[in-house]
Picture 1 (spheres, rainbow, N blue to C red):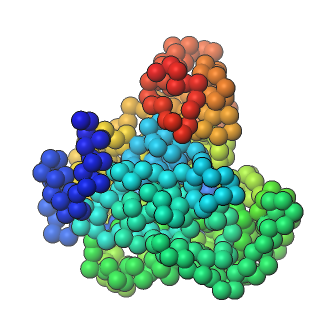
Picture 2 (picture 1 turned 90 degrees about the vertical axis):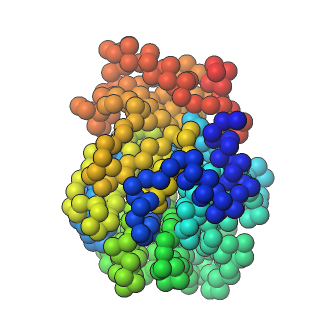
Length: 494
């Protein structure tokens, strides 16, 4: 029986306490486990936020004082990558510690009942070994407030089936395309939102009729309640906000800060999201409103006197989107990088990543360690005093965070994306290989870039480095497994 399968069996049939005992007995106890108090863990995840949208990464048009303070009081990573270039697979890599060549979800695939059918996307299996299950086994209270995208109501991928004591928000990514939904979910119960009413007109065009309760406000309030109720710790709070994913919707009190400050071309709603007369102002206002939520969480941690016992992480699930009124070129949302959401160029997967833990993580530090979403599971579990199961793609970067011990490094990072013709990418040292069109042919051409000298991926040097290209071609086949929900011509080469 493989280690990965064994852990799935244990996760499915053991109580959290029994699983914790078995994991500690088989894996041993790390130095952090000797601490009298396990640290609380908060992970705040933005949705489609570009690395360049934050002041601490160079943004000049949008205010983000609280996130900038998070970086000033903690560590900013400059070579961190999201799990994918779109939402659901990126979240799956975080939850399971597996990259998208091995993960169960490799695209924004619906639940099999059609785009307009039942709510929810492809559900991760009940026996998945998730970060929430492993932290729960270590004695953590677990809560998630925001967008899920890994299984709808009554599915085996529901957050309550995947280790979360409490979930509040959107189970379905499609439902999250409006910030004023008719309802949200609290665990398996619908929470009606009086005052919000939407209708669909003219094909996919969304027309907002009434807008009273802004969903991220509600998620933040729910998170604050969770923090108050679990202040005794340890707790794991996962906050996957929907901001700044389109539609470009934000309350007037936030919009007023930026209204009239930028040149505007109104968005007419023709691409399936609500029209916005001031898209630049709305986008900036959404990012700043997200920043205020971060500030509220940080202020509450101090009020509850758990600030120094809590590790706070901040990131984004993929690069900025160029669609439905958003304008990443105007805001330089992707910084110096090429590409956007849905692309495996650096702009689609290079993500902001900030970590703060007073007295443990050096304030004002910058780290060039190369990391990715699948590293978060083993990192969080080690911080909790445990050790992640074998067979993962992720590597704990606790040594990089704390500046203690030897940091293990990835030989390579791997991505596979199954929409828009399909694509793969590998980062091997400073070499970056990309191949497009994998849904049509297994031997599609490989582009090669030298990130050490060409961070913008402008010059394809594949023709002058045939040895590297040949190595990448082998890895593109070797470092993946076939997935029945995501077939490609590559499957026949295994």
